[in-house]
Length: 293
Image 1 (cartoon, helix red, strand yellow):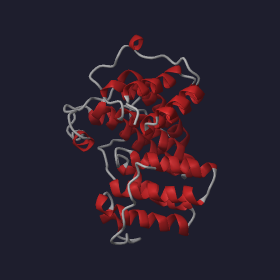
Image 2 (image 1 turned 60 degrees about the horizontal axis):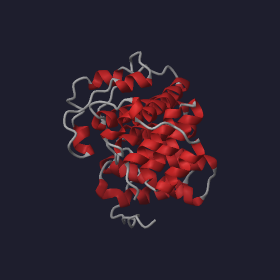
Image 3 (image 1 turned 90 degrees about the horizontal axis):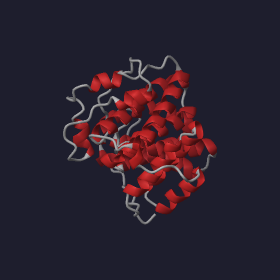
């Protein structure tokens, strides 16, 4: 709570028609927050999400993917229990996403690779010395980027989209372990962004699941291209999972860094689904590399 900024005030209300001109304008953050406060209080939150998800998800890179991550956590909480604070958080999350809306160059999957192989084939940008906007700006001219995005096998229906998204989350979480030294904080988003999308699917019409997979894949690949190290570390040089999932999460909470906690949340979900011990080891690796706040 001590680290939170004051909520920005709006200056010019976002209209129900003509909102596109304000999309991706961080100066309009206060206006977007006020807009979605009204949206989630005046109509069912699922109806708001159904309308706004397809408008926002092409800009999944917003705030280094924090827009979609925050939305995913809010939706996940609302699916468990609806109350005023959770509705307010969804409105805040959507408002932040809209104000920070940012696209990455994308291409629809059309290949034969599974998520792990496709992620391993993503090329690195040439200059990894600046902020995320500078890094993502290099994707347009990156040789092999369109082919790398196309390498993922396509989803024929909503069920396949969900399964590929789950596989992408698993692949990114496990891949974090040997690659985290490239950027311990930023590479976490290659896993937490697709997890946010995966958790939102139950609240969306199934007709939106395939395009959601495409956006999540582009985001995870973009973070990988922007921050992956030149070489992964060998497995023998990395920690093993010698604690239970519950103990691992408790340690992440005591660590207090928000990115460590988000990664732990994602990795525990992966571990529950797959039993892969490296998902838990990835959390230990994050705690080794990221300083406690």
